[in-house]
Amino acid sequence: MDDNLKLVLTKHAKEVILYLVSQNIHFSVQCNNAMVQFDPILPDEISQHFHPIIDFILAGFTFESIEIWENGMSFEAGFGKENFSSLVTIPFSSIIQISIPTNNSVIRDICVFMNAMNFLELGIFDSIESQDITNQQLITDDTLEEEKLLESSRQAILSNPNNKF
Image 1: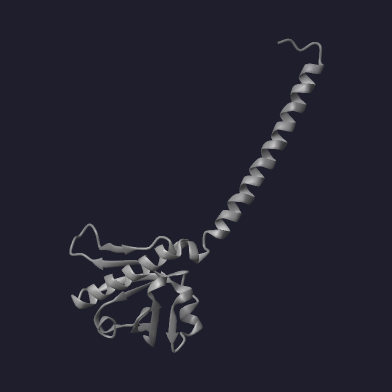
Image 2 (image 1 turned 30 degrees about the vertical axis):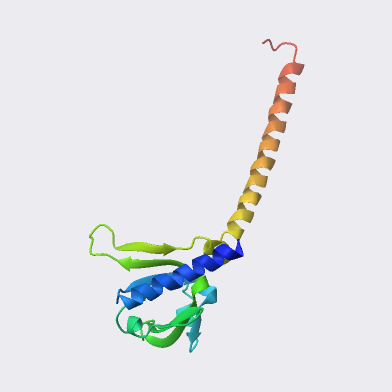
């Protein structure tokens, strides 16, 4: 990915969040889980359920606790049944999407920022690509085997002088 584009998108994510906070607009942020920090670290029974993309809803006390830094933001959040409290720190460069809630009954949230380039850094598509290559190889192998069988069958038919075409 182009480093200049990454910088532009990171700056834009920060600007959108600054605007939303200044206007007291609650929002959700999705980001690369590997880049998120928790202090204190979350217990395994909570963090083991996280996916590569993690979603935070910033409303209420969580919204009120937002602090904006040069390269990221932090906020207090509660996790799990016991509402385990942790300070969450998210670099702006890890943000994939920012959404705001709507009052519309059809559309619950609307995306106001999207950095699809960050999907590439997740690595979740790498295994799919290698799986596709493996599947393509299997298809190619199967196709070659099928072609060999068809050719063998064709040769058997052609070698019999009683078969007429």
